[in-house]
Image (cartoon, rainbow, N blue to C red; front, side, top):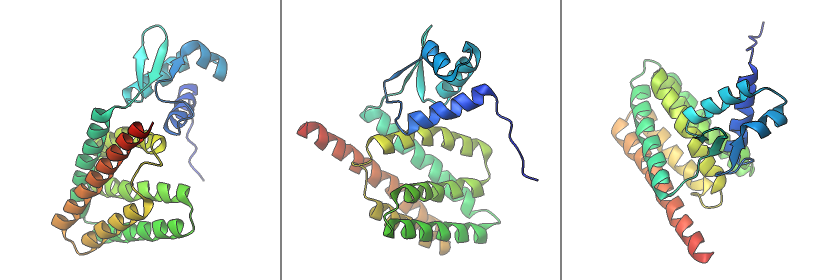
Length: 222
């Protein structure tokens, strides 16, 4: 029998709003007023307040007293911090996962993820490629088997995903992402943590520098 997870109204509203923010159906800087959200979901203020509190705890909105919240906005410092923090978490997940007793299974999953990324990119299925690219990193956190590390990653990755959706035309090309993932997977297969960690660090460094450079170019052109 399948397990059924019972969701409260607050859970459902939280999930819908979170997806809308990440996909930028609700834009950065946009206000989320309690009154409008009550009308949208046809509920009382209580589940709205609970959902907004969770979004605030994840750093997706800034609270506005007696109003609700406002979706976070990003400046250059924010982008630097998000990429650097993601890199730190991924490096620790890489270390712990490569020390795992299930290292053989880890390498198999990582290699399978790379194969799927290659398949999706070849068929120009960018949406599935992005999902599998995220899964590549998620695999490391699962095998790291550290719940606090995983939860910290989940929170910051929501902000990371917003950036990816806002600047999807300015981020590093998908073929480069795939190539770097292949190199990391190869180092992991060779049990070379030193090389794998060096490649992972550069993976985030290249992506951050490429994005910031293109944001500056775009602002100059406009």
